[in-house]
Amino acid sequence: MASAASTAADDKQTLSRLLTAVIGAETARDALSTLAIAPELHGESDRASRAQVAMALNAALFMDLLDRVPTAARYVGQIRETGEPIVFDHGALRTIDGPCGELPVGHKAFARFLEPLGYEVGGLYPLPALKMTGRAFVHRDLPEMIPQFFVSELHLRELPEAAQGHAEKIFGESQDPLGTAEWQALDALSRDGTCSLDEAVTIVKGALQAFNRQHPVPALEDYRALLQHSKEGAWIATEGNAFNHATTRVADVVALAEDLRAQGYPMKPAVEISQNGRVRQTAILADKVRRAFRMPDGSETELDVPGSFYEFITRDTDPDSGLLDLTFDSGNATGIFAVTRDS
Image (cartoon, rainbow, N blue to C red; front, side, top):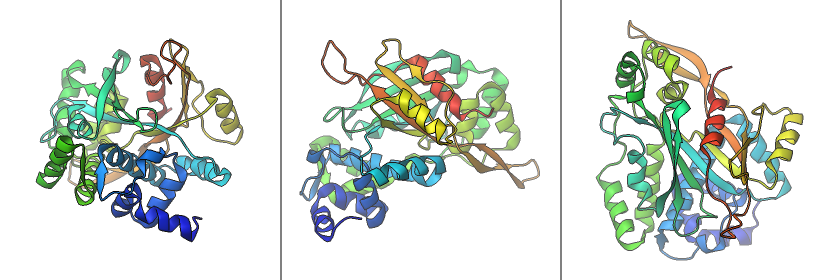
């Protein structure tokens, strides 16, 4: 528990004030005491930098994932007891490259507000086996300390025509969660690189809404038809653009995987190793969640489906640059995607 002195100091810090306004004082304190935060992100200004807004969004998304994923909450609770801060490496989400109602297509729905927060595409990762493409959004200011976003999109045009039709029925009525207030605040941040705390709160609250399901409850018939051709598309049908996973950067992911497996965590069978050998990843299998589906008579039924999960990554230094290798790997990503598939 934080001391009275440290709590008083936090209350003056820009990042703490911003996060408290978005997710509440208790959850904000938990986030700031759990995650490794670069000192320059705290600040004591009445204006928030784009880096602080980006970190606040990531911290809020991290805490939301813990609420939705019991195995993630269990792991993070164990780490909290040790007092060791968690280095939040990246979060991931899935989008639809196809008819999405009011939403921009695919990754563009997120690029439009990630860019004003200081993000740029640092890598493009084809995922042909999944009929998808991934993009790594890396922060310009503190790339090693502000989590990346790995945004993937499913190319509906690569699915059979019948499956495309079912997908359009699911996603074609999506709503846009961002409105005038959010765009005014984002414009200010984009123009100046900083914004008022009120504007920052508007941005983060609006961005959090973007990480929800924007389309109506899917019809069970459409879901099952899409599931036959894309398990990833079916996942988006129930979970929308929710944080698919959050990832902790650790010193030795191989040893950690063995330790967690011994503790009874349902781990992915193998560690994924990048082609250059410098990036190694594994994950806890996705927790199941209960989701509603529409029936032909207008009633609803519920089924257990794969939800989100928690991932681990080890990054080595790039010998050419002397910097941490912040890249991803198409093979690694394809392997990690499998943890949201039913056995």
